[in-house]
Amino acid sequence: MVVDRMNKMKQWTSVLIVGALGVTAGCSGGDEPAGGGKNEAAGGTVKLEYFQMKKEVVETVNNMIKKFEEKNPGIHIEQNNVPNAQNVFNMRLSTQDTPPIFTHYTTSPLFIKAATDGFVADLTGDPLLKNVIPKFVEETKINGKNYLVPIAIGTWGVYYNLDVFNELKLEIPKTYAELIQTAEKIKSAGKLPFLFPDKNVGILGQEINYKLSLDVPDAETFIVDVMKGKKHIMDNPDMRKYAQKLLEMRKYGQKDSLGTDMDDAVREFALGKSAMYFQGIWSIQPMKKANPNIKFSMFPMPADKAEATKIGAFVDTAIGLPKDGKNAKEAKKFVDFLAAPDMVQYYVDETQYPSAVQGVKNNIAEIKDLNAMIEAGKTFPSISRLYPAGIGDDFSKATQGLFASGDIDAFLKKTDEVFFNKLNQ
Image (cartoon, rainbow, N blue to C red; front, top):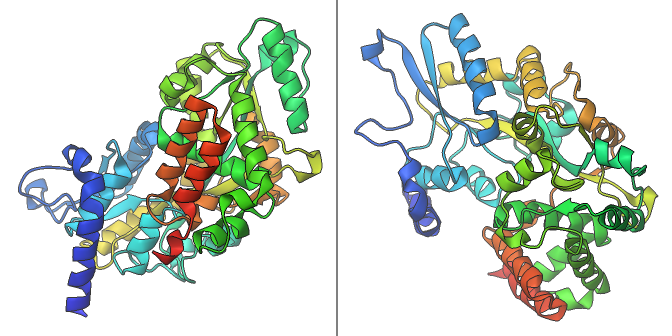
């Protein structure tokens, strides 16, 4: 077993070192491992690192840590939030420096590999999951086991400026055709309909994977068949329609979408530079900070037919522990604190997410239409959870090529190269 584990470590090191070389500056330095053991210099206080991946919730998490430490003076929690957090996490895992408490994503291919390779604590049936809505306990299982404690749900929608919609007497579009008609009216009024943050492959990947599930019937079965080498992207005429839609919507966006990242788009929308903006609900809090006076709400990205409209939904904030981690008792105590309904209520009120925990209310007016879809079960999971590592970024880069050239045939060919037979390699 020791030899097997060492072999897995070697595999991880070779797979991850290339992707993480550019981000090692984010790791903690010095002689002490960042995992955090007992620190006698602090009078016997146990010091633990919380490796938290979402930069927009850092302040909220610091407030939660303060509340925890007031109740548990013998435990000190240090939040660590770094750029390129997933790459940094993977590098640390490969060097046996796994953080003692961390957030991660159940749909991440690299996290799935870490869990199945035995580097993450198995939480199946653990009391830490006692308050989690059963649906999300089931949906986050990896090969029948739970490795993360779900806290909050992520989803996407179309942000829209209420002042612009009221001024132009616009209604919420229920179909894709109505969405384009709405964009035309906004453009005719001399305003910018959409902002698109196409610079970052990870952010672009969220949109294109969402729309793949929304616009291509039985998308998961089709993509898996392509990845198994049974079909080609060009075999499905809906893929061409999908590409045409991506291009069509860019006609109503800013000129240089490939030079715009998410922070730029959030700020510009908050300042009233566009009427609509498709993005995840994690942009709500930074948007309100950028302009506390902005009036906006969100509606689901519409399908071709109103009755076919669903929203992508996934467990966004989830907390895990390493297998055989140091100070496991204290680490579990902190996770149990974060997963308690009163703390989750504080977290979702501050961060604007729906809750994955029972007994927590959704008090965010802007996402009431999205939350109604979640409660009605009109959701689909993230298709990217099916991809081998690296596929998502390559798909995004192919799409950036589409936006740069407008060549749909080249895009379909490149996308086929990205996906074809990848599950057999």
